[in-house]
Amino acid sequence: MLTHINEKGYAKMVDVGDKENTKRTATAKASILVSEEIINKILIGQVKKGDVLSVAQVAGIMGAKNTPMNIPMCHNINLVGCDLDFNIDKKENTINIYATCKSVGKTGVEMEALSAATMAALTIYDMCKAIDKKMVIKDVHLLEKSGGKSGNFKF
Image 1: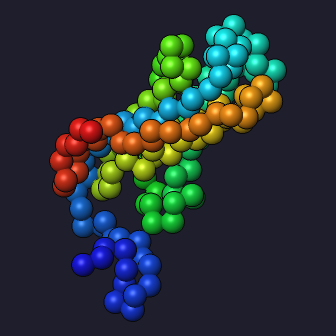
Image 2 (image 1 turned 180 degrees about the horizontal axis):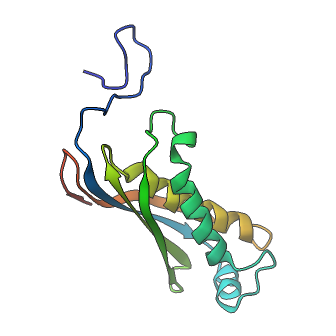
């Protein structure tokens, strides 16, 4: 049975009203492959648009908070926390983004974590595109989640 389709075959938002509130956590990852020049300019603070990772951090949090505005069937949830971590791999010219979202509620925070990681990657692209447009956003996926009816998950 498709959970997001009503009896007439139209899209619907799943009713989670009878579910119990539980503590939920999700961590997602996104990576952006950039040039060596971009890595170096980020590290020494020479990107003309500003502090790339600080802006990406805020963009990721905003992405998590705005998830139901961008993904039609997502519920509005009460985020109780959202944090991002950036790991710069100079050998691979890659910035790995890790986004963790937390909530106490009736539905999970996987989409919020995925949105946060993706929005941070898009912001890095936006801030660095004047240097080099050959960036690749890749490897976006859920790393782990806990809580809720389906229990824990690790990629």
